[in-house]
Amino acid sequence: MFDELIKQIDKCLEGFLKPVYPEKIYEAMGYSVMAGGKRMRPLLMLLAFKAVGGDESDERIMSTACALEMIHTYSLIHDDLPAMDNDDLRRGKPTCHKQFDEATAILAGDGLLTYAFQLMLCDPTLEFKPKYTRAAAEIAYLSGMGGMLVGQAVDVESEGKQIDAKTLEYIHKNKTGGLIKAALKAGGIIGGADEETLKLLEEIGEDMGYAFQIKDDILDITSTEEVLGKPILSDEKNQKVTYVSLYGLEKAQKDYEKLSLAALEKTKRLGGRAKPLYDYIESLVDRVK
Amino acid sequence: MFDELIKQIDKCLEGFLKPVYPEKIYEAMGYSVMAGGKRMRPLLMLLAFKAVGGDESDERIMSTACALEMIHTYSLIHDDLPAMDNDDLRRGKPTCHKQFDEATAILAGDGLLTYAFQLMLCDPTLEFKPKYTRAAAEIAYLSGMGGMLVGQAVDVESEGKQIDAKTLEYIHKNKTGGLIKAALKAGGIIGGADEETLKLLEEIGEDMGYAFQIKDDILDITSTEEVLGKPILSDEKNQKVTYVSLYGLEKAQKDYEKLSLAALEKTKRLGGRAKPLYDYIESLVDRVK
Picture 1 (cartoon, each protein chain N blue to C red):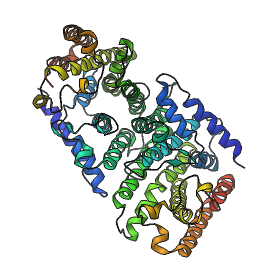
Picture 2 (picture 1 turned 90 degrees about the horizontal axis):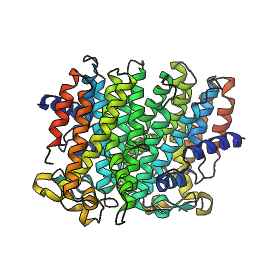
Picture 3 (picture 1 turned 120 degrees about the vertical axis):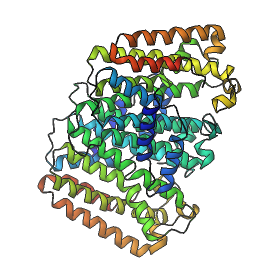
Picture 4 (picture 1 turned 60 degrees about the vertical axis):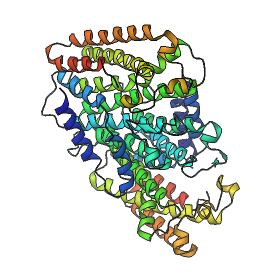
């Protein structure tokens, strides 16, 4: 249903990451970005943009959409490093430091993060419209000290420790929720939404992010390496407290459904133009990977 | 001469990095930022701002100045990692991954880079003035795919290889020059300089950055570990081609002086208000560390 949009996103990403000198760093960045993600964050952003009636002729929005995918990918590359999760496989392919080397993987992550801000901010017309800056500011905050980065920091700190429910909630809501919230809010901002609508989009992102992470915990137990494209039971291996280990599989599944329904309910309140966003979020509910 | 300004920068940095939950990541970020750098990039930015007649009551400029120091520090933290230069000492103190651990050091670098953009972009007044966005865009480009990051990428790739003069020039001009250029240009942009003046500031940055890196190569041979606060002869140890190994100490010294003079000459052309910038650049010429 969203294949056409995904194709557009992929084409833009490929264009942005076409290797020029020094080729190797572009190749490492491109390798990880083009390794076949779901493009969930760019999609959420573009659909939120449509949902609030954003001007379809606005071409710069694709830069911000691609920037979100780059920030997501940088976080995966760094999370996979030997000093962090030490994962060899990601989406069924060797991780960046396995395919290249550790130094290149560190730089590729740094490069994607910095390039993302370049894409969001550079404006050949020198107009620098406030809405793009505000979207980039939100993305900086929610991918950093107000979301993804601090969620990951607490996650790393908690490894092998018996953490409480509050800490797990903090990790889940920030680590994954940060960038999902950022995607929805940025789409709303660039689409010209009012503050109330932005608040609603943020809440949808919060529910979705939390749900998404609970689902990840569930899949780590119930799926297979073939389907996921990465090792299963990795949480147990890394002695990680998860939503499932804390509350059991049944409650995890129930809470996942409750949060997903809440996100869908709120999306409905955005009105008729939000139908594609609604459909996309609904399609995620039954994801198997 | 610039102690008062450095104190102001330090105070702002300390304020921005005051630990809140999750404290450990703020501590790691703060540890490296407050480990006693020269604050060259914030200083250059603030002095360029003054040189072009920037409005002194403009308080948001300190956020961008501090952001430059954070970006500089993130690059040092990641460069020091075992997979990169594997350095144990920086400014006479244990490097971030030695003081904390590798995962924390990777995250602290990522955090500083992301936080830098948050500081540059967030605007509680929601005005998002174009000049700040343009400065941030330049900084993104020159610290990333148009400067520091690609310089570092070629540097890492070149280790242990016999590289030619052109490649060494690329590394030197980008790796250090990128952020120095960014500092001067950002100061000019926020100060309201015209395009011609911005061009001149960029050229000053280019000369300075190249000179600075040549001086680093010279000091690695002629200084001591006590003075530098880091091991000397590290280039030889890492089998690195340097300006000195390529051209000899005498020509390196001569070219260093020539580039420094060119930078000073151009700074003079900025007019009387550029006197503090001139003095500061002059004070760097005879630096011993």
